[in-house]
Length: 475
Image 1 (cartoon, rainbow, N blue to C red):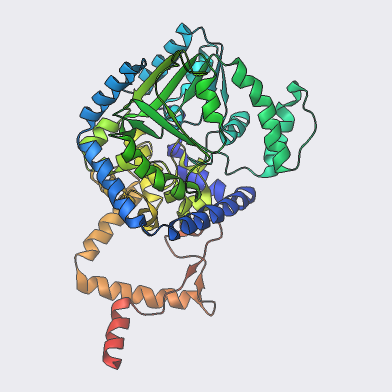
Image 2: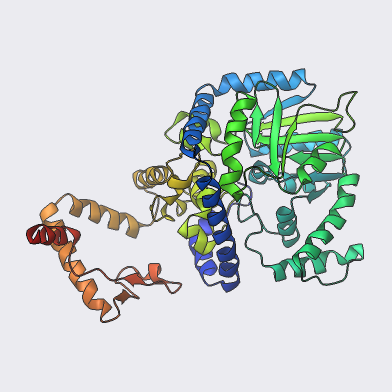
């Protein structure tokens, strides 16, 4: 699978925990995402009703996905566009490259597309001899850095202002821009200055799609920079890359989901640009592409549709789960080793690239449930992660030590008397080990957990059951 390094999760996570610059960048971003989201939904009294309606829309669509995909294809054709079906990443790469070659493309601009990242569009086009330029500011930054995105809505969230300034100073000198910039407005303006000519020179523009509308054949993208509009209107050819689960029946359904998307992602009521594209340019249009193509990507989604992971296909890619995840907040996105990080990535990645390749991701979770609590479409992420853990155990995936430990715990848990006796002894021993500090910096057989300077509050010296019985006697 394209550039997958999920098998390196343990090593990359430890490195991330010791990266002070990364931790500073993540800390600043996380506070903003969480606070803005909370304020946005506090001001929306119908939030829970919107969630229920959105879940119903997505469930209905997934139940009849073949019907709505056919309706969408027919609508696109009526509008003068073409639809291409890609079963896997290789198919998607081949289709996009062929479209670009037929257009005689030398330069391609891209709006942010997680599916494009998933199937490796950039690498395929570059291998075919074309220049590919990311136009989303975050994606442009990480393209210069030669890195994958670390967040699905803020690809360069792991970068500090100083690091971005250094990147621009290095890569923009060839355009005659040699001044080292230190202020954010200046950095953004320099990116605009460089990208402006790229828009004008592009032969093909590629965007993703937040929603595909079956009744009209339209696609919707949401941005805060306007780069998506320039990418899909200025070039001669517009290509949309989207997963098959992005389709919804009507425009009204899309507006319901849009009310949740921006609030969940960035805390906005709606993004600065919410753009609908429907087919190529018509005679009366002032701008737009001469040709319009949609590449619908399966890449494992049909298999998810048939099993217990169907609910994952409700995901609208808002990023709220990772913004509220303590694990993602500590290590960032690159540690996960593929396109989708955080809780949603810990489910999607094993299902897409294989559970053996990404065996550590389902276990990179405390199961605190915060991700399910904030998910706008109520995806039970902790339950899905537990299901993946069960699959691992059933298929003998993982270390022998881990399997031995789980087997021992299972044996012990089925013997309540012995279990309570051992946990009572553990509670007392751990309290004694903590000494006067009340904190544990190491525990036998759990050394990895304490790497990175973590500490554990010591137990109170008795089990919950003992504490409950004592309280009952006192009352």
